[in-house]
Image (cartoon, rainbow, N blue to C red):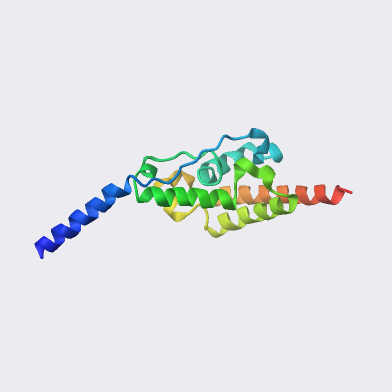
Length: 159
């Protein structure tokens, strides 16, 4: 039994060591300020700070890559979460959204923070400062609703 466990342990160790050579690409594209949410819409400082603190690592090009993002297999999960987050919502590339898409993104932001779906619980375990208080959720949702209404009014005014 102990010989079998030793072999399994050595194989596991060999796998983990070998996995360190298979690294996913961690990207941090340059931020074009004129394409960001803050450049495209009026975002109060309080809301901007909330978005940076609770959403920025996964939903912008300003990701702060933690040390464990260099250790496989955790690195694979972290890079996948960031890539998926940027695909779903990218605060650094807000200009790519049509007015209709932007309105939908604003609705989604409020929905996912209100439901507690975002920030992800797995992220909050290592980044407790990203947790939003009920008052912060209220402030964020109030802004998303106001910004949504502004977009509706802008598109209604267009010929």
